[in-house]
Amino acid sequence: MRLAGAAAAVADCTGAAADRLAAGPGTSPAPDPRAAADRALDGVRLSRVPLMERPVSPAARVRALRHTHAAIRHVMDQLDRLFTETGGAPGAPPATLALLRHTESALRRAATALRAGTAEEDGTLPEELDAFDAARAETLPGATAGRLRQDAVVRAVAEGARLVTEAARIALGGRPPGGRTPSSPFTYVATPAPVLWWRRLRMHLTPRSVHLQNALRVAAALACARLLVGALGLSHGFWVLLATLSLMRTSAADTRAGLGPAFAGTAVGAVLAAGLLYLVGEVPSSTRSRSSSSSSSDSQWPLLGPAWIQGCSPSPSS
Image 1: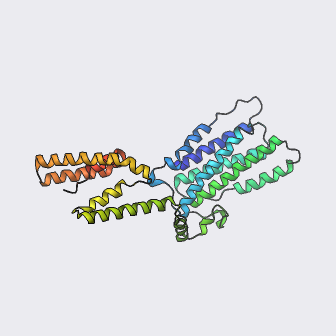
Image 2: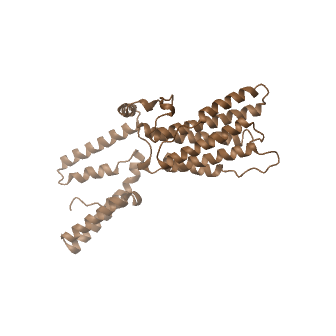
Image 3: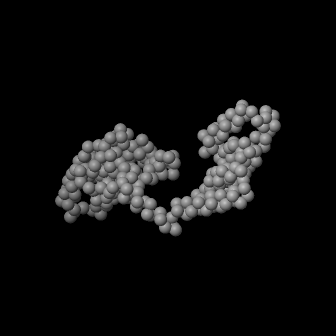
């Protein structure tokens, strides 16, 4: 849904660019919708998407979603050039205006398809690109440098929109236009899913991989914790392993930063548990109370942090 909103916002910018190029001298320019488009694109950045919703899988449809976002961003970058570098000078040729209008229409169809979750039908943008190239070739000898630069940017906008429509079609489960296997960057469409997953795994089978380093560090920490439990003969050694696993972060600095709140939460939780046992004794009601607090901590720890989860987790003695 966010990606559909970004595509629609960029379509508005495309329409505004066409309106500016079509306006005659002395005509007041149309409102600039680039700020709204930038906000929409900022909302679909990977860092702004919830962790469980990020398109990071090597599957073809998920990769196509990432390519859709990249293509929409490319179109917006080219539109910025059209508004600034080329000056948006009025009086563009009819072929240029027609290509921008068809580009706007293609982006709106892609936005509608992304909202509906169904692949769109083949559009006419490739044919319009061919028509634009033919018309441009006729006027090329007498064209000024500004006109050539403007036409090049307009064609880049249309080409980016074509990539948006193809990537969105693949992301929604459709095949490339005409059923043919597309060229780069969509060569993965005809690649079996196990091969895509193996390529991703093989990419991280190197000492330079951050993911492999994190996995080895967690494995080493768990192994040391298990050896410590065996050497000391702890009766509740499971909690040592659980604490080690819950405290490990993706970097040593993040792990050190989480140690203080975790120890503080454990100490506070131990004091509260001891006070509760002293007041009410070891009865089923107190057990249910601790279980309830533990369940509450499981659902709220992403918001309240490691101190909350460590303080509300059952202690080894209970």
